[in-house]
Structure formats: structure tokens, C-alpha cells
Image: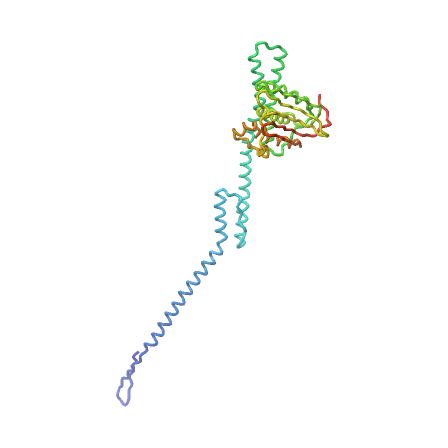
Amino acid sequence: MFVGSISSFEGKEYKVFTANNITEVYNERNKELFFVQIISVVLAAVIAVILLLLIKLLFRPLGRINKTINKIAGGDYSLRIIASGSEEFQQLANNVNSMAVSVEENYNRIESIAEDRKRFIDSLSHEMKTPLTSILGFADILRIKKNVTPAELNEYSSIIVEESKRLKALSGKLMELVSSGDSKLELSPVRTDAILNELSIVFEPMMKAKSITLFTYSEPLIINVDADLFKSVIYNFVDNAVKASFEGGKIELTCRSEGEYAVITVRDYGMGIAEEDKKRIFEPFYMADKVRSRKLGGAGLGLALCAEIAKKHNAKIELESELGKGTTISIRIKQSGGKING
């Protein structure tokens, strides 16, 4: 650094110049400036990392909510979000959970409706087989038999009409039973001997087709039931017994009083049911496999529906079977003290 000055002394001017080396000062300044720059960069980086971590920490609940929403959108409606973080995130999580609950309930309801409709169609088609067999059997007799007496004509045509009416009533009741778990039955007192005698006539064509002898016996007991649905249970029992019986076999359809209960029993001496299958015989759709259905005499969806009808009547189904020796199936229901109308 150069410094100059002019001075006058005794009439003369003097110029004075001084020089000082200040390089060290600049070097020190540059060092301090570089140090400040380094410190600023380091502090900025540290602050940036801290801010990034804070942002990730603060928005972590949002990421979790987003992942859960994606999974729910993919079909996993059982997922729920743990409400955490700020009040806003907790409120958002609760709203998403409420939405998931509504979606799951609606999905289950729609799925249940679809399943109920499928069950109704399968059940109705199964339940129609036996009455239709009777209708076709008696209609065939009227068509083939040359000399039909007026009495026979009246009897066969009456059976066809009654079975057609029963099918019409049964379809509506099955719809209510399958699609509504809390549907109420129309109960009325009926005589067990009347039910069994009616069924023995209805099953006559089917028995003749396989040369099977049907032995029927019933004590005159009164039970309080929905007649059409309860007959459907016995239909299933006898129908399965026919399918399981051998050509020229025998089936016993009986009803006896055991204390306060009426016990209606169907016994056959046919193929029987394997021990491992008896545990699952009343499960819905268990017998959907055709091969297994033939092996066990068609006892499957029909028995699942029978179990549901029995439950509605506070009745109990009992099954005993031995492979190769036959099956005994019973329904145990309380007797009624009511009187038969008419």
C-alpha cells in the first residue's frame, strides 16, 4: 500500500511517499472468507438433511395412507389405517377407514346376494327333481296305459295337480328361505301318517323304475311345520335312499313317537356313506362333484338345504351309515298338541 503527501517547509515543497506490505492482511481475509463459505455450505447441507428428514417424518402417515388406499383399491377391503401423526392426518386416516368399512360392507352384501341367488337356483333345481319325476311318472302311466279306469285317472291326475301346486309353492318358499336368513315359516299342525302316505303314493313310479319296495309306517302324530318345506326334507331323504339303493332293494319310511318327539326315519340297504364323508355331508355344495355325488347317492346340496329347513323348525337331523350296508337318516321334531284344521 503506497501513501503520499506534500508538505511545505521554509518555502520549499517536500513530497513524502511511504510503502507498506499488507499482503498478509489480504491473505488472512481470504482465509476467513473461505472458512465462512465452508461453514455456510456445511450448515446448509446439514439444515437440508434435517429438513428432508423432518418432511419425510411429517409426511410418513400420508405415504402409509396412500399405500393402504392403493391396496384397498386393489380389492383388499379388510385393511385399516392406524391413526397417527398430526390431528389432520388422524382425521384423514379415520375417514379412509370409514370408507373402507363401507366399501367392504357393500362388497360383502353384493357377494352375499350373488351367492344367495346361486344357492336358490341350485336348491330349486335340486328340489324340483323328485316332484317332477313323480309328475312325469304318473303322466307317463296315463299316456302308456291303454285301459285306465276312471278311478285311476282321477287318482293320477289329482297327484299331478297336487305336485304341480306344491312345486309352485315350494319355489317361493325356497326363495325366501335361501335369500333371507331371518324369514319366518308358516307353521300349521299336520299329521305325520298323512305326510308319509302321500309320499308313498308320489314315489310309486320311482320305486317301480328300480323295482324297489317302499315300506311305510307312521303313528298318527301331530307336528307343527311348514308342510311344503317339511315334505321337501322327507322327499330328499327318500330320493337319496332310492339313488343309493340297489335294483330290487327295500326302503323303510317310518315315523314313531319317542317321548315328546316325533322321529321320521328313512332307511335304505344300499351303498352307504364313507366315514370321512359323513362329517361333511351337510355342507353346502359339498356334493357338487358328479362322481362323488353318484357314489354317495346324490346326498349333497339337498341335505345342506334339509339341515337349514330342520333348523328353522327347531328339529334335528341324525345320520347313521355304513359303507356297503346302507344308511339311516332321521329328523327329530317336537310333537304338537294342536288340532288339524278341517
